[in-house]
Amino acid sequence: MKNTMAALAFLFTALAYSNIAAGVRPPNLVIVLTDDQGYADVGFNGCKDIRTPNLDRLAKEGVRFTNAYATYAVCGPSRAGLITGRYQDRFGASRNPTVDYTVENNGVPTSEKNIAELLQPAGYTSMAVGKWHLGTHPTLRPRKRGFNEFFGFLTGGHQYFPEELTIERLKDVTRKWDWYRTKLLRNETPVEIDEYLTDELTDAAVDFIGRTKDKPFFLYLAYNAPHTPLQASKKYLKRYKNIADKKRRTYAAMVSAVDDGVGRILDELNKHSIDEDTIIVFLSDNGGAKNNASDNKPLRGHKSSPFEGGIRVPFAMRWPGHLPAGVTYEHPIISLDIAATIVARAGVTVPANKPLDGVDLLPYLTGENKGKPHERLYWRWYDRKQFVIRDGDRKLITRQGRDDMLFNLQGDLSEKSNLAAQQRDQVTELQAQLRIWNRQLVDPIAPGLSYWNPKKR
Ligand code: CA
Image (cartoon, rainbow, N blue to C red; front, side, top):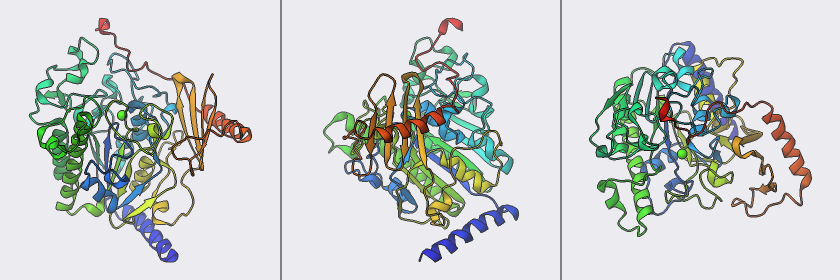
């Protein structure tokens, strides 16, 4: 069995490279990213009260990851890591960035390449749909960053109902947080929408697949659901009359809308017979938030926290005919691996001075490589002077002025038992590894989300 798996893996790898050489199209990439969805809020991780048949189908037809991480515990930096395949602290996208568009570098700086930019030389057409939050400065918007098309909003969150979207553009915003009310942009033009936002985003994604199916494409579908404000349409709310708690009911409805969207995307791929030409990845940008009635159990903590509930996310990947189906993968992986995996398939070159931190997951998932994709994973909260390292089952949380916390996740998944006092040698060893990593990082290049200076305009 092992030999067969290895032979198959070799065959697939060899095919991938010979396909590129023969001019056969490299695989499409679809990333479905949700916002603040809890680890336990998908059926494939055991959720009982929210039904996610389409996400479960994606996972069942591919690989479900139990130890998958985001690179940060809130939106902006996590997205900067995911989209570049590099730890965002290497290029200073370390804060949830301001949406003040007069601030330069308020997202991923142009010195870095994102997945769309990396795939451009291989002939990919790319579209970003939904939440951007990777820079509102005019030089950092999607169509300046390798995406042929954009439909969505530039900010970190949004109202869900069309009638709430009354502000034409960011420059018309006079009060903080009113940027949640800007009209959606189709490329650079504000447009009216008439449906619930999650459905509008799905429509745009499905339309793009239908139009672009004959050539390699990258679809970055970043739903803002189930991020606050908790708003769901009747169509989805009526599915959850059985949930008594109003917040949880609305949250469930919001997740259900995403799940319907994923179902429509899977159907669209199937309709055009491009299932086997398409890698589809589903994940959340960070753990469930404290304020959106999400559920990270059995993990400790929530969005923004250094505990597993902040950074471990629901994650599944499907590529029929190339990846095994119905498999659970338990070694730690990270959102950074998505870029490395598609870059390897597309045969494009990454700039030598900006190597990816992610790892091509394919050999690990086919069984060709029995090892672990990562020796260690790292996190930094610059303004808190806080760091996390995971090395095997050991996890150290260290913060200036506070006691260290050392956990062994094998047997203590909920991080209840702090071993730091008993195991000082392990703490010292992990701190040394963190220092090596930290030396490679730079300071933040832009102010945080609360920075907003309307007087400048
Ligand atoms: Ca988020």
